[in-house]
Length: 165
Image 1 (cartoon, helix red, strand yellow):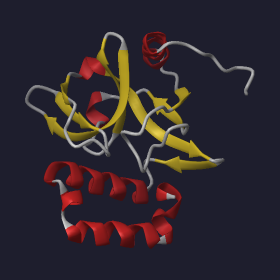
Image 2 (spheres, rainbow, N blue to C red):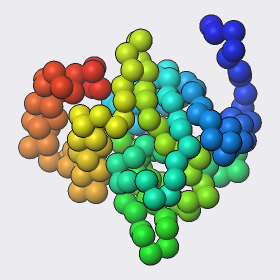
Image 3 (tube, rainbow, N blue to C red):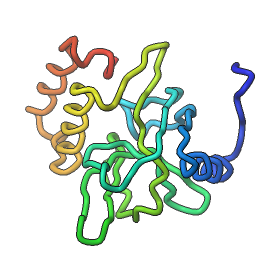
Image 4 (cartoon, one colour):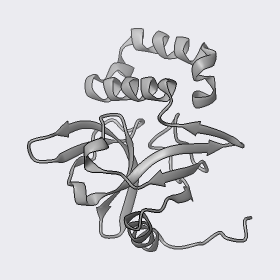
């Protein structure tokens, strides 16, 4: 266990993250839960960096405050430019979380560390997987048998292996 590890409640983590990210610094923490499997897994270390509204894209994975005592890491599946809101959904969750305001966005996940391997979310392979996850959430592709074969094929490609195994 690193000597600089800090243990806190979800509420305290949200408060700390807001302060650190607003100061322009990054936050690294251990993910908990399974709503973003297979890309983000329970126990993965996530690096979250401050983000500008203009650089947010559909497919980005964000750290957001959804209630006063709850933060989540979910993917942007839709953006409404007219009112500046974002629709979030976990990759493994059948329904979106709902629309959130820009002020609820704490930062963007830019790196996932698993088993000593660092996965950078800005690499072309990660962006492609993000697009696939968005398509799946919008059109419920995982319910179609063709998508099953596509997913099996993607997992076999060495380009995506480090992200999905």
